[in-house]
Length: 384
Image 1 (cartoon, rainbow, N blue to C red):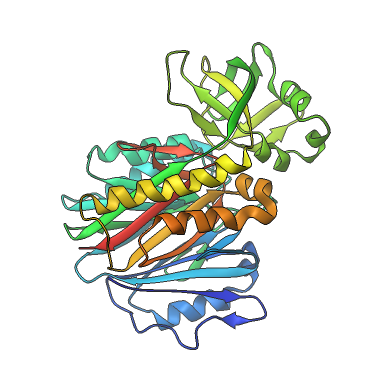
Image 2: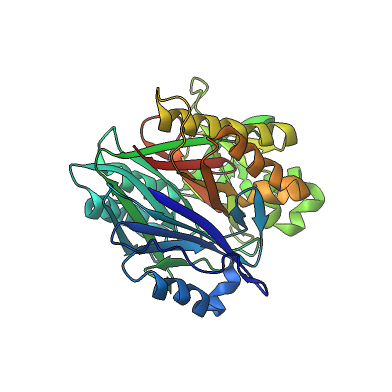
């Protein structure tokens, strides 16, 4: 694999004097864009014109990751030319949460082949039920297939997200790239680092990803009591106080859910993934040091899964970091500590790009993919 990463900064232009000569049928151009570039599509078209044979995918973000840096008003780009790994990209439409399972299932069917080794998925961040999307993706039913990715972002505005497919900006879509053959090595890691607090409450009324009641009390009313003065800033301030859910007292596997919207009339909260009735839910808050150390752990896990028993690696490694917008809002000026922490855990040959998202897709450790919120999730790619 030949690899180069670079950036476009508003008012500064490209960070390279010329694009790398890596165009081919097996080249993946991955880009993560500030939402502002919806009105400057010519920048993305410039890339597409230079890489006419390549597969180009990307999405809008809530902050663009380039190496150690976290930027706004920019585009982070990775160009990876695979030498022995065929790749294929697909897209499908999603117009609302009810389409989520079907969208995931369609992506899985279109990319499924006997030699499929991994999927990297980028989805609309606001119209999707991430839990159902993942459920559809997991219909592939093959234990050796890695499924990772994330939900597009729109800063802290929560108004519109979009994708890039073969150089064109599109809305209401789930897109994905499939990696094939025995030469691709894929790693993944996902860690949170948040602390739980307050009583654990039972979800007594919900519908898919909409939460109406906790312990038979209106969910929004109860949630506002915890937020206090911050309640006026919902839904954005809700990113600082996610909910951890689990099936029952014996379930040690907690999933984190982040708020996407509030409904004052229904006193409900809409989350990025399912909030099943009967599940237990508990509020979470930040632990700065644990959040940053969790990013390091995600890097270590991804490197270990990718490398296996190889030890140190000198081949090019593409690291795609997807972290939740809530982590960025919380960490503030310390945000780049988590991107630095990830890179330090990876091989020295790794080049990192990524984005801040509205949800992360990855196996918890191994096995099937899950929807996560408030995590640093990492996908690593190299060829043997």
